[in-house]
Length: 98
Image (cartoon, rainbow, N blue to C red; front, top):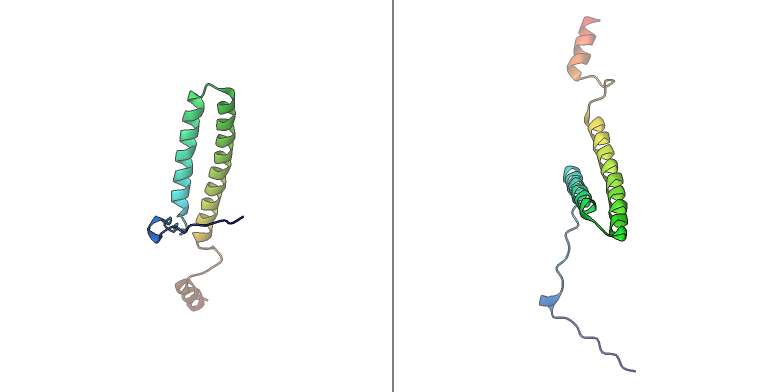
């Protein structure tokens, strides 16, 4: 059996996707918006299967939102200067005064 594969012309090939990382705050905002839409869908759902799917979607989005907010909180803690690290001026002052 012969099989023929046609090649698509260059113009009809899908464009390459952009895989640049999304900033954390944007990801949190998009997740929050998706959570709001899922809650709205749940409030308007009438069929049992649809209600179940919204419950699973809401639970998954809540876990994602919690993960992202924990990640953002961790980044904020890492950005704060440690209390053990002294500035050069503080070192000079302590050296002169001692």
